[in-house]
Image (cartoon, rainbow, N blue to C red; front, side, top):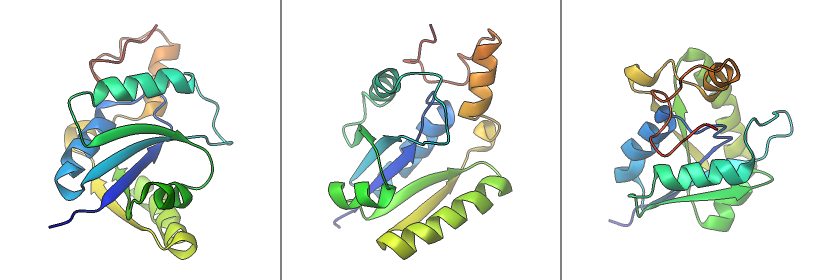
Length: 153
């Protein structure tokens, strides 16, 4: 069976154990997963893109079918460029679902790209980059919420 490729877009500021779980659980579905750091004009990043890319590469160093990339523009355009048939997204809760569903419908309308949703593992449902950044800003230990390769300076 010829499996398609997928793009897993996000800011990954920083990458969390929840992100890693979604990608690893989705690997049997896809020939390749491109974990793509997108630039979002509405978000201010805590960590430079080079650092986030390094962390992603470390987090997936043992996964030959995962590639970390950086992009600007629309995710559907990146999918076309990389030959990916799907966008992969994780859902932690019903709020995520409502937000992500709207984006998925728009991606299908403008790019004819389908989105595959995977629910977060219950043990990761509370973990978000936003909360991890808040913990970091307040000097808390975040080692339980980020992959082992992520060392916060």
